[in-house]
Image (tube, rainbow over all chains, first blue to last red; front, side):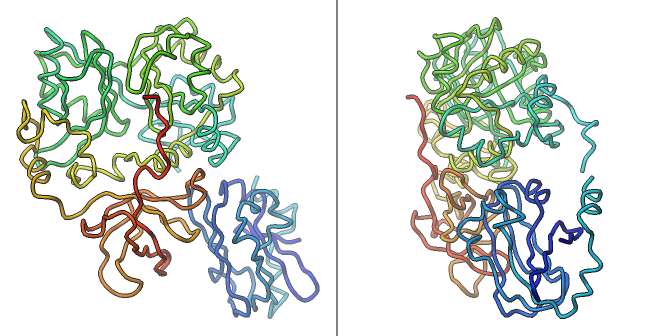
Length: 119
Length: 377
């Protein structure tokens, strides 16, 4: 699993990458009350704003961590946004992206580096 | 982020740290925004049982004079409320107005027999005290209380919890005030609050505040609640946050606060006018206003936060209103908001649109409070 400085996690599953937010991010956001997911079959460029996540405190964006195509979104989050707090690394993935250049993954941190990053 | 070291601490700062509070700067104070329970669960706990809030940042002021009538008469020159007609040991909501009829701050004031006890917002207290001193001294003394904490116990189990410390509090009803001994401290208690729930606000000597809080927190019903949940609780309760929902440019009639101006101060009343901006406020009462504060219930799940523009139609046109407070209401279990709309759009049930991230989402004008109040009348 890889981690971005935007507190996303990326897990490779075959030829797609599953994206979610870290437990640290979920804790910082507070109780998540609304998630707006991207459309599937959308072509995205790295750093595009693809999701909106709103907590009891504020709204924030989730950025596309890679160039590619959104191939699947986790519709369950729209009905149960609280899953983001309950199981951020598991059930509460946001979308799956089919990357056009998997080498972009190399830019991201491994778990040890991420843990150091969040101190 | 501001350096918390430059901020003032309340007498309960050590207890907040021990409880694991997340502290944030608020009106010059380091205040707990949430505890480990989190905003959502704190909010729901307060509506289900009892929540303890530290509101020591608020200003506590005592007004004294030759007689209580002299004090009340003088205070009526600053606020459009019936102060003279307030019974002993009762409290009332009020606000300072300015020459244009705007609101300078909102407040609570109580008739405590030989003096008035006034509680004002933290962010405005310096200006409020200056205003009172300039207008009232030397005939009336304006004493700022700096050696007492202020806490609130709110929620349906508040009476059960507080009555364990002194059964006398159970006999109080909404807006009663009394001096009550709690955990060995002489407390000034009112049966009121700012959550829409039954509960108490308690002024306690600062050196005894922590012991009182610990006695309450030891009870199963009571959890500490931060400013985050305080905001969502007061929003569901339809209560204004000064600076967001009302400010120096808000005529109280626009702010839907006409209920707070008693008959004695209105046109034809015994003491009509006589407060700053009276002609603007009584004029607005007679002639109507162009905009009104209303509640909003967005139809979707997306919160409409402060600043969201409100439109009459799904496309085109100029904004007809704006959200001044908005977020997620845990008790409503959906987004809640309040704000202003043109008066012709202020009828309950009117279907409007709020623009969120460039998209117009349906929202209905809703009756305030958005959650029924639960006071002990």
